[in-house]
Image 1: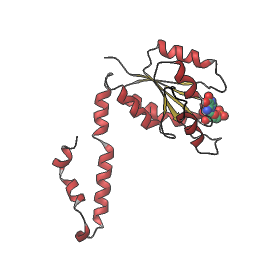
Image 2: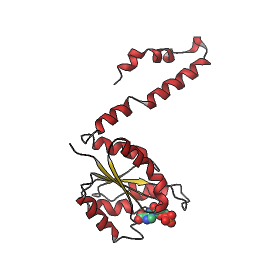
Image 3: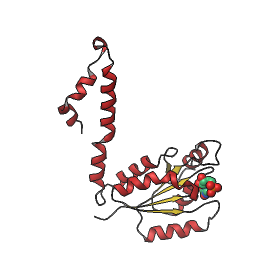
Length: 188
Ligand code: C2R
């Protein structure tokens, strides 16, 4: 096995805070992560250089984030075989709250190998990438840990809080069922 290598790239330094949640998740899973800035609009000549370097480094996937008229993912995807996932971002300059970037990235002409995450969905995009890379070092273990974890527990707690103010006669007993740990243990 080998380490997963994921490259994060954004159109501007101002985008960095919105892609960092992807870096956190990927690093927590044990992937090697790089972060760079390339702009289709401002520095188009850097794109092929960036990609040649990523290919030489054995990068498994690229997450390309941009705001406004986000061209960057659409420029990168057709000129590399590394899978590219676009990440539309909100931007301090936008008047459409990232919808402009979402439309730019998600509606490629037929034949262009690019898909888009949701607006500012860095963490979800990272989790999808990890599933594609589940055979790399340590990733499967991390995914198991996440699946068994925190979200379900939070929903159970919320149900139990709701149940505290409930009229017994009207309840379905769902909250009580959730307390029976054997049932939960068999869910996965
Ligand atoms: P500045 O804050 O640098 O002015 O950038 C960036 O992603 C950023 O959200 C404002 C916004 O412009 C976006 N930008 C792109 C591209 N290059 C910069 N969408 C590109 O190549 O797609």
